[in-house]
Image (tube, rainbow, N blue to C red):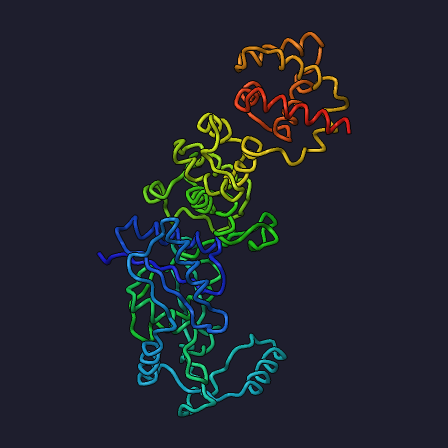
Length: 463
């Protein structure tokens, strides 16, 4: 049985898109499930838009999330001789021909076709002229004019294309440079690719590439066209829906494993299982189960998955992931006397590491501002805070049970709802109404700092 070889072939014209990450992921998983190879090819023939900076971003990000190729990536920009050699083979076998039609001629041809109700496409007028290569000629594939191309897509089943609706596509431009389709087919053959897994936007390219394969005598490939990643409005995912690059999500504090989990679930499911790691996907993923319909990317699902993956980390792992986000706020995670207690209590305070780091600021730094909406809602006057401050000042045993008891007694004696007592204190201690249990928060901040912050809020309200 032939070894399965898949490839991910990004163009380095931007940072790594999360749709691209999903394509790379499915290629990687399918290869590993079959003890095969996962390869990367950089399609950088667009010299104006391609950059080494984007290429590095793509390769570094793929590597950092564990999608490492089994061989060194290749660059199309360094392989021109291979494509030219293949084009010569096509010319010599009579499967390709030179065409000297000018842009004006082609425009006129298309206008006439549209006017007569026909599909605008090249009509093969230079096919039998026997032209030689010149500065004005392009090389075209002599596409079969009759019959069909049948693609047995793993996800979509049988897709049939009529050859009569496919024109003679260009293989070499007038400057002698190869086009996308020729490079793609030649590289798949040269890299030993057996399985092409890519977005459904490439379906229309498939019959054209099969024709080039047939003309060159290359073996057939298997295809799987994935549903596109869509925004919640069911349009192709773009920046108007959410961040689109992998880097942006990592900077927000999403774990790589949570991103992989969420992307794998775009268009695929496994019973009631929601949480997957890369090893789980290699064990459980089935490309035949991927849906045909567009896959909706919903940030709330990523938030939920991230919270689950964060919860599955050990405390040391969690601190290691959190440390750089605190450092961005000039906070040393170890610069707290109850660091492990604090981090453990706050690890579910937000869905992202960035959000958790922000929630931790009041425990390491002075409060810079208060949540004004919370003040308006819970602090109509200072009397409760003044009373609580006096009670806490006179409290001898500064522990969770003693603090909770004195606050509960005050609330009961004054016939007040719990939020009316607790939320003003939270605002004083953290600047907002978010914190772990109040007794724990007061205890971990310490008596002196807690009293000081309550006094500061009393003064702030008074002014």
